[in-house]
Image (cartoon, rainbow, N blue to C red):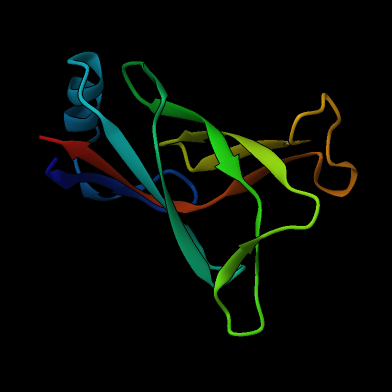
Length: 128
């Protein structure tokens, strides 16, 4: 696999690099897409694969349902939380990241983080 950056936008969805139409064309041609979310508020970035991709004439959305919650250990490495939960995520080139969280193996939402919609800078990569 050889992913390359095709589009980057700020947290309001304004283009910073690349062309949205290149990303739209890639989605409409069935290319695999990865999204890098720059989470400045928490001081880290993370990448996930777009499992379900949706393209319109002026935006792209990507859904991922396989992210599991993590925490930082004393040496700052990642570990699973004591009560793990699954993130259901939709990223959009309009700048938003919509997230709902459910405890693993249950149909119970995480109460304090039930549903959020945040604005983030994102990079969209396509497998050529």
